[in-house]
Image 1 (cartoon, rainbow, N blue to C red):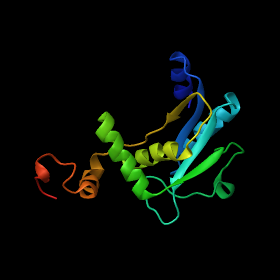
Image 2 (tube, rainbow, N blue to C red):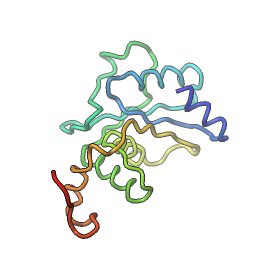
Image 3 (cartoon, rainbow, N blue to C red):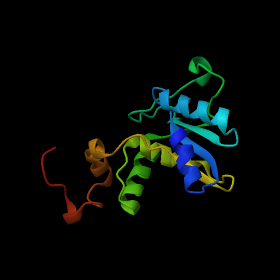
Image 4 (cartoon, rainbow, N blue to C red):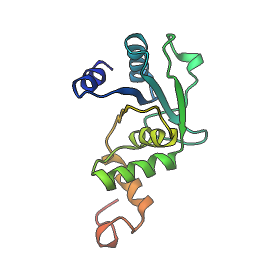
Length: 154
């Protein structure tokens, strides 16, 4: 959280919010604690799998039952596994960055949120996508693969 804040200040950003995934709760609790105590103007958006979805690395939460402190995300956004995968693939196609599904979920939450207060937003991407290549290629079928097919062992 401190690094996000320092880098945002260094770059002159007008930080309005941070999107974090809810997994083991450590980084999301730390980020919420930091910003609620030092920058209460920055909103924290927690990202979790939608009911019935499974997104590796994150899970559905009930903050009222486990959050050890008063500092909680301002809002929790549900994302389907399909939305997470599609967002990760879209980022890879447009920016060349290969996120994992939890990173795709964080990006999908930003997109789902829609109209936000003017300013800058940080999306925390907690993983890379190498371990999801087979899933992504299966989702794409032949459309996204050079030469029409995937070579190699599965």
